[in-house]
Image (cartoon, rainbow, N blue to C red; front, side, top):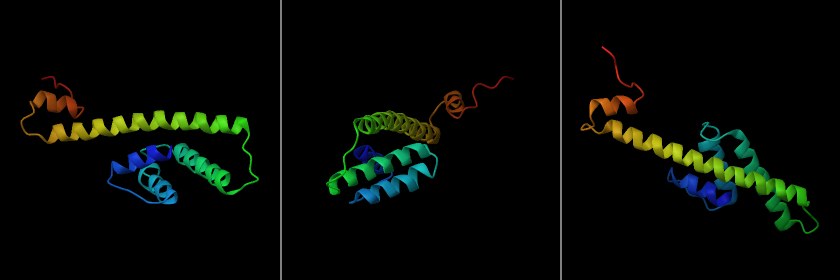
Length: 119
């Protein structure tokens, strides 16, 4: 999930050196703005917390069920982030097409959602 979030942040030319910085920026720029659902922000935080505990708490043991749940949430996170990246790319190219003056008016209308006007 972490590397996906880093890639997502790069779409806005954002880069951070720490895990905390990456997670915080994802929340600020993508979750709070509604691009990604709040659930994804929560799952990212939860996975990071488990990673921290696993790395630094020598007595911590994660259950198989919990590991499977985090893995399943990670896969769901990947799928959702891929769909959102594709949706954002489509918006970007749609805006770009609308800004091109040489686009046929009928195509421009269909891209802007106006469709064909009946007379």
